[in-house]
Image (cartoon, rainbow, N blue to C red; front, side):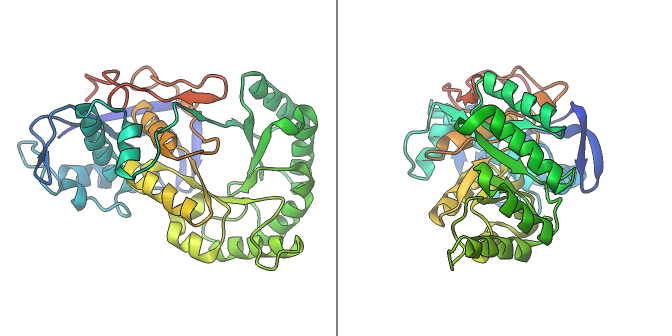
Length: 370
């Protein structure tokens, strides 16, 4: 196993719970013909990416330590290497190795990573293109509506609008301006990033009900799982549903998954949609398994990134492609990077991302990186 540190700059600083970051740092993880896992030889080269993100995964130093601990002094991968990487304690490290091994296995079998992941779970043939949403940041109503119209002109039929930086009244006005500008044919999502308290969130669901939103994402702070469950229940009761499971404004949870995990979210009945990040879940295999568990519980999965570099971003496309009838995903994130590790083998076009159909991640597109 080979490790190569990397850093790619962001077009603008990313705000996290631990402060702003100006670049994404991590490690490329390469595996080759000398590696052995559970006694099976891996003859094709495989590549993974481990890029920790504060607030979502372990630290950079913990990620490096975990990866170095699963190989010998001469670089050979330990037989139980993947099992040694805890998907909760060191998810980014596990993501990097799990992806590298899956890439190698898929390349050896001469099939795409999406096909490999789907076959492992007995899922149908993956789609050849994944729908994605555009993301529009804060702005006055006219600016927001114009940005959404540009996205629609570029082919997006799903747009996520950031809310929560302004008053609720101002955000309602912004979203109403968007709906009036683009009509009913565009799916609109609102992402509050945990900015509202419980009273504001309840008011928001009432006031936004007439705008036919696909969902409101993370209306409450990440650690307020009880509040999210109560909000969803209260919302259903106001719609005349005693069980609180149906409403004009579905609720999506993102950051709450990092705080509580999927099981707690499902047990609480707190979400209609869950936003899944393979890097934070410990690998593409675990991300797809989590999506399947959510779907089985009646909760829709959406796949997104932790603003990853091109290797992990491509892997997330494969995960999304393996989810049957996946909703538009948050994979149009390449523009948030000022530079990247390699040319993008699956750039966004017309509101969707084509899935690389070469062996593994993208055939030989990333050969020579690690």
